[in-house]
Amino acid sequence: MKTTINGKRYDSSRCESLCDYDHHNNGNYSGTSHLLLASDGTYLIWTDTNGQDCWTTDKFCECCDVTAFIDQCDPDPAEEERLVELELIEIIR
Image 1 (cartoon, rainbow, N blue to C red):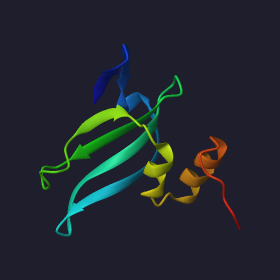
Image 2 (cartoon, rainbow, N blue to C red):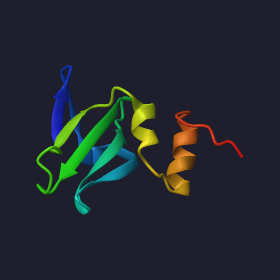
Image 3 (cartoon, one colour):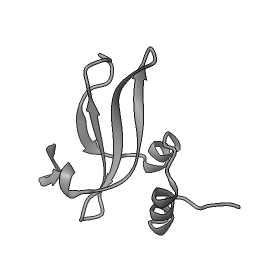
């Protein structure tokens, strides 16, 4: 998916995927939201839906609150490692 934000053109297929979470409606899968990192350092959200939920729609936009997005995710170990590298989270053991 492509979008233009503040005169810059972004392509979701050229961004790094950092983490994601699934959407459900009445227990049925209805789509996934992805936190992406563009080559210019901009964090983006790409939501890809299947039409099962009229409240969740396809979108591709700038992420205004990266921490809130990550809080909704359950990153795997590789995703956690990358989020730490980017100083978006800190692992407390």
